[in-house]
Length: 83
Image (cartoon, rainbow, N blue to C red; front, top):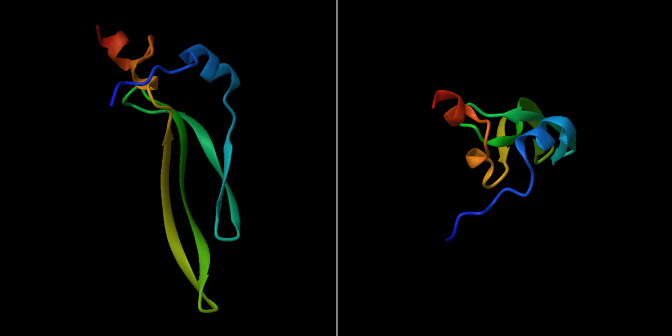
C-alpha cells in the first residue's frame, strides 16, 4: 500500500487540534491531543472505566492511540531536530 500524505501541517495540528471524545460502554472519555515521541501526531487516552457484564461492574484499563496517517513524516518532528 502506498504511503499516505498527511493533509495538514504540524503547525496546523498544534494550533487547531482539540480533544476527541471516545465512547466506551456508557462512558464518554476525552482523548487528549498528543505529539508522540516517534513524531506522529494524534490523540491519546489512558484511563480506567467500569463496564457491566451480566449486571456486574468490571473495571477495565484503556490504552488508546489515534495517530494521523502520514504525520510522522511531516517537517519539524524529532527526526528533523536530530539531523
